Image 1 (cartoon, rainbow over the protein chains, first blue to last red):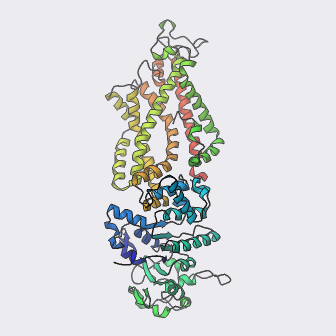
Image 2 (tube, each protein chain N blue to C red):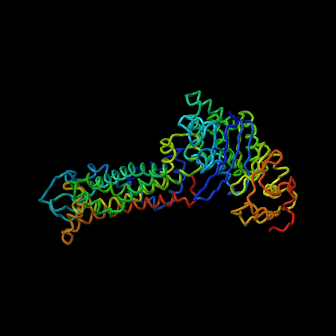
Image 3 (tube, chains in turn red, blue):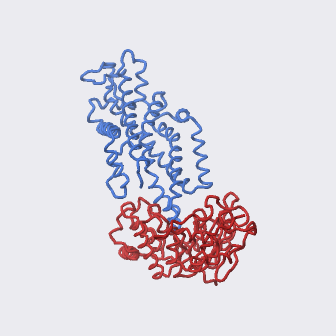
Length: 323
Length: 299
């Protein structure tokens, strides 16, 4: 018996024979904890999340829910899995049916939850409990999504996910559609819920600033591959992969210099060898071959020069000539 | 749809807030208002036909050969036809026939077309392929020819005409609904619904269908005029409503030979067809403009 709730096991996803996600392995342990999946747009983060949600079947590899393969589920196992793993999407405006009131949306989620037997007053009190949990007033039940604010919509989405008493929440850019002040409040809420409900988060984001507060473990993706994964503090404070280092170097800082793009972001990624080599400021001839995801200390890195990066983000600013 | 008054199309209910928004826009639309008012008058006249016509028996088989082909006068506003029936009475009763045809064809088309369409659009895959190929087969025939052929094969009467028009009309609704449903199916809220494990039946009828209705409603009002014309064409060719039913197309066909001597027999039912079809088109165009997403309509 493994301690992981949900696990991607060498998941590869191809469209038209082209792998968009390549051999990704991730473990989501029992909560309260969080795993962050970071990387630029198009790196395959959301695709991995959709595979973990069972919305797309991996071309190869498996998604394991406890000891069971998600693609081999029986009907009742699938229902159980649905109740355990819930998504929260980027934009509450998109993620709520525009014709359905908040109350009806929550009631619908309750109808497939372990609390489905509740009727009348008991159900109403469960609905207000859920709203209370996400910091919303009970009066909101009769409102339609367009009649409430963006932050409230995102809270409703979180309440709807919580209605089925899940253990894992897949948060796909949960705050990027919101104002900065609202973002902070939603992050506070997520942090509190994580501990109150012992939730495991899979946080998909390109906003590194929100990673540390929610996730103790981070995987960095580039061009469909995990290039570095390990404990968040290690990965983000002392990156070993030049791509991670470039992500950190690109973070804007108050009063600091406007960060310059590292490498050439416009060149895309290499089809063979190390996919990052065309943008890598420290690439060498060896990078024409594919690096393996190798264990270095407490983390995994796929880079021939990991030891040279070794926690020094400034190395990506070096002027070494790329081959 | 013809007999739903515009007030009901835009109910003041929170769940239909999108329609309340539409109503705000419709208010400023002269086109929509004109169409709606004319239709309202037609509907009221159709409903009150026995009480507002001087010779209601003329619409139900009564004849009065002595008074045949009288020119329009105070007694017979629109004159009388070959067998002495009051043309005004029959034009008013003809509105009932036309509205009955429009309402029946649209209800049946929506029932069959939209149901199949949303299921096909949501399910995708082979279900969508099968449904779409079937609609393609129906759409491959020229609509009027298919209707004519059906009316000839079956006994020509009002019911056959309704059936024949429906057969050529429903596939359009299937196509429309399938396209809309497929796009709704890809929205994040449908991902959320699927992730909860909500049954596909509930997903289709509680989420996809209500969100697909706006374009369908617009299409309904745009189509109603075309159905009136098609029904009139069938009757004109003797393949739709039969004597003594008061039907505009049939009345025009009966008056066509007399047009130089007794123009009123064909002219007034012809004008009725024109006015009704035009009113529906104005209503539809007005609604299409009001609900056009490019005007910033989101919901």
